Image (cartoon, rainbow, N blue to C red; front, side, top):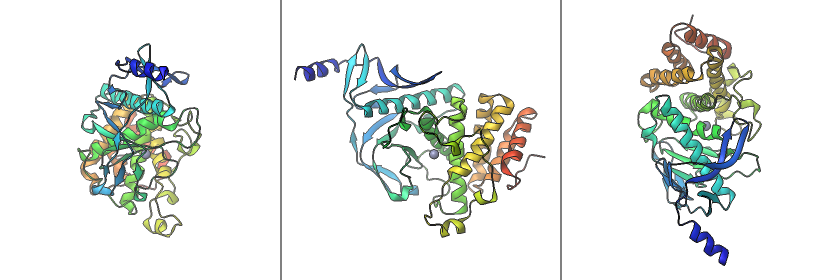
Amino acid sequence: MPVLTLLLACTSEAPDAVLAYVRGDDGYVIEPRSLPELEDPRTVKGTLGDMRHGGRIVGVGENEHYSGGRALSVQYALREGVAVPLDQDGILVYSFYGHLADAVRALDDRGVDTTPIFPLVLAWNPAVSPLLELSPADNAAYAIGANLFLLLPDGDDRDVPLLANAGVVTHELGHALLHLLMLGDPLLAPIVTDGTTEAGMWQASLHEGFADSLAVLLLDDPRFLDPSIAMPARDVDSNALLTSALLPDPEVLAESVLPIYDPYPLGTVFASLVWDIRLTTDDPEGTLDLLVRGVQAWAPEAADDVEGGAFLTALASAASPGPQHDAVCDAIDARMGGLLLVGGCP
Ligand SMILES: [Zn+2]
């Protein structure tokens, strides 16, 4: 009982920092970090959005939205001005919020405006409709159109939980940013809402490719998942290539045992192409700028042509003449196997 009294007394003061996973030069450490965006560490409310516990994601496509849920209540002790969560979930929540704040600031520094995305709801462990097509391995997601981050508990014991991995968080922000760049409003439904169509499959792959591209470029790390989970198929510095088997095909999908499209293999080809450009030009910031301008160039026509060739044509058109344009065309040549119709390259 005296311990409880002490905790309550301590936590009445506002903390200066929170304990969270922080990405350092030698990997991740759990240490105090300032997080001014998080205005109330108890309820996890702040300028980026408020976290809710439970609730449900209902509907799909344009009708998708979050329903219910309740305010979070993180139990923490205040030690020398640091909010120290009393359970692992609290550290995960602070880590996710912190990495999100870092990515938003890094993008802002590079002139990429993400403000229309915020504030949004961050849903901690909501019930999700099977139609949302989340696999059991997904620990975080962005619900496109609902403008919502989902944070799901990780069943596995990892050195760095997926929700505390800065690359995973940046990847999810990448979905929000691509949707914003394509449509100009985070609350609009995606251009294609049926994921079993050819355009829907391209859209899903381009989303995963852009999300991974943002993560590898902002962190300048082609293997950002490694601290959490070895997943060589997602590494962007290996030999991911477009083959005819990877080309979206609704008929093949319809005949498969589980007719849910897996956008990651093709997405990794796109992200690998972007990483090639970063390596060839030795310019992560210029490559990120190119990627954003490429999407902006493609956005007006994306409504009619959501597919990889149109996207890459826009990317080539957005490239600065000279080394950057050469790097884009070389990367397309190396990764796409001549299977896409791409304009703007010799
Ligand atoms: Zn994703």
